Length: 374
Image (tube, rainbow, N blue to C red; front, side, top):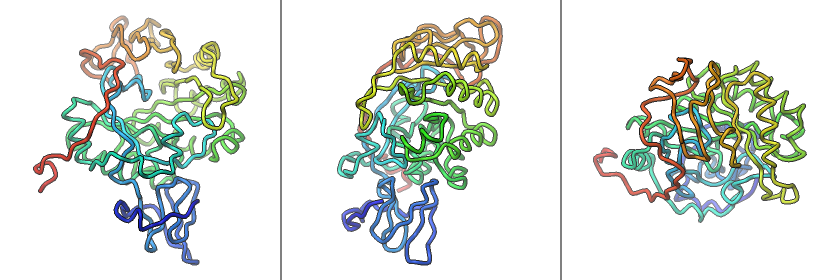
């Protein structure tokens, strides 16, 4: 937790939820299991939630590190309207302290001035609609820490029939979790490892709350769920750990939850660790398939077989991918295999021309007065 000049942030301070006052004059954040206890002018471990004038405020509501239109597969989500485009954005900060962070320039930022794009929830929804995006993704840094902004934006999106996506580590308390996922349509949760030691030493968090989030999403919501595990050589890629992770998913969540194994590249505080070999990802995929999972993918490497979707009924490829390009599509509008009729788990619709691997930066303009009710 760090101190900060509250006057510099007063213009962007937004009343936050999920906190309570303590008897010693401090307040406690109830958003995530870090339970940060703050003095006046102090901000939490996430950097963006702080105590100001005796209350908690969010300093990034309406402020973003940038907006881009991406393929939905980049989140990664392979079973949520494949081939569609998604308007992606994030803010700054994070409630984890991953030494291997692949987006550390955003998630570890302590420079609020990098949040150059200002956008209201209504403006974001309007931009998604005008750019023919099927969904809006809260990503780049963890949306849990800007929950109020994400929730407001999700509601504005739903008013325009735009879906919402959360890319998150799942480290969140139950009450905030209920509110947050009530307005989310799909989530990709980073399951960093299947070891408490890994979580404590390399992320500064704990494993149990993340597993609780996964169980909650799968069994108590209608949120479409996919999981990503970044494989780091020598840290979380042993056969034993991968087998335990896959067996837990199959037992607790079911075989239809897609699992993505992605490649690590040296960055942030783990620059002395080599990049993940493609063979490691293929080995992990085989272990997970042998454990009974139906949909297991590899990412951050060129591997068409590992990026494609196979029917668990006839075992034929129903979505053939090359990176983010969809080369063949063999599902009907309701997600049934055209070869054998097996239902593929996910959210599907009419498949037209896929968005492809493009990445298009977007500037958000204020919505028309009619869109904001003025």
